[in-house]
Length: 188
Image 1 (tube, one colour):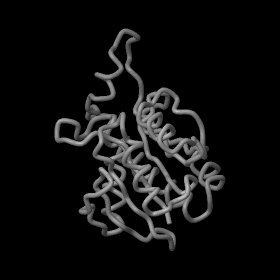
Image 2 (tube, one colour):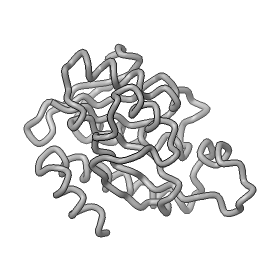
Image 3 (cartoon, rainbow, N blue to C red):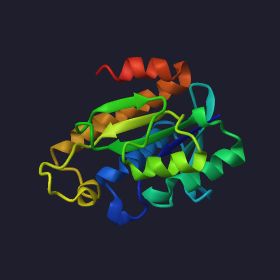
Image 4 (cartoon, one colour):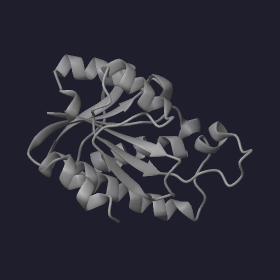
């Protein structure tokens, strides 16, 4: 059993922002597998799917980014999902827009959603699919404004392709393990 959690902020005002790329990826995966994200529990909106022969919960925490760990930890504890079976999809400003990087564990790298998850799980040993959203062009640009900003018209097709790549990475993690997913998805 797996939890696939896409990080983001609830509310229309955050729709299509860089910080919500995890939510959009969960929506894409749900659509691909014919799943309705209609359950409300564990401070989340979620649905159940079968991916690569495994039962999976597709999750969009509704706690706002900085408290993502509250929702994920509650769900993991309830369903007894081991930390290594919690796959987190998050935005990453250190990667160019559209770039995907799969990691099996690691620090939060300054990402508040990951910090919250690491704190609540008391572990950083969970797989993550980091989705590059680019970085501000100017050093003095407010980082919060940047990640809460929307993608440009040029970035949208790049990010749509990134969402497809992220879904492939999630499938690969479940089917063949984290090492295979890193080998397959990080080289591109």
